[in-house]
Image 1 (cartoon, rainbow, N blue to C red):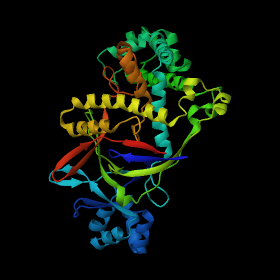
Image 2: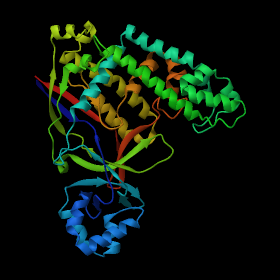
Image 3: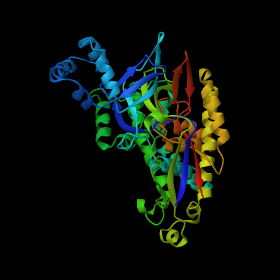
Image 4: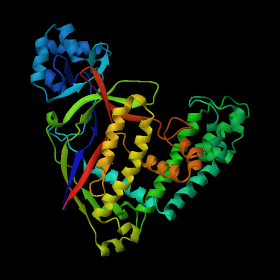
Length: 444
């Protein structure tokens, strides 16, 4: 067993699945930066007397947007209640809201960072292991023999669904209905592969004049994503497993990473808004983020035993991965390519130059001994990994097939079209930062 040091190079968000609404957090804008106080509903019940609690229950029934501050000030005219809640909170964090005129506001649900039972944030070992898995897969796919298997499967996908794929080359929105003449150009066996026999028969009957087909571009797109996901999953299993197609024979079963140590939330977390780049419809979204520059420690164990490896049926290429230096090198190589992609993307995004600057600094810190990886919510990238490989080696296949069979909402541009970044507003200006980057180092 060795120690794994995890240093945050940008804000990160690892979601717990919990969301704080206006009845579980309170914002105090009088402080600079503003403070966000988190509490449980049970704490309100303990503070309110029975009469006020009954009034509170009635008030909740008639409100569209629940907010404890609104109840305290508008219904009870009691600011002291807010002070009591703040004094009895679970924890409080600095908050950076969105600008509304001259005011900064946090007025939506807040997605909560993963924490222990005692409300202390930590980094789960599964996050780091997942990032390493992606890097290992990328490494294995660099080999021509493995890449050719992936390419052949995607070409088969293209040949089987050539007619349906052609529909994406037309200037349509995802919500557009496909006209009947275009649908008739798709052989029935293709429709069966995309939608299944029952749905394909229904479409065929409707094409005979028994009602509208109601097939949208997004309907076919959705099913293409499922088919491509199965291709990715199958290739991954072939490369990562040994003697049997079973998770017990996965090469990374030999890698174990513990959850990291935990920290006090006030020390390492803050609340800020998330921004989606390259999307027309803007909407406020708030999350708890771990600060840049925090360091966590976990334990890491990698079994390297020739007898164990051979008994599980791992190839020589797979057995090479049971080495710390090789594993870290895989992370370095994948992140090197991923950062190139991210830097190129933000070169063309005018107002996000601070993101570009941060990415270049992260790129500078990426080494074979201390690689960087990207973790956290919305940072999973198996499809992104495979699409980058196809883009580098077979641009035409990428443009004509891959971008149409991914979760990207654009049917003719690079995948993915959007990026999530953090927007920290303070001192009258907004600073944009990339998300999810950490640096790894193994202590011998």
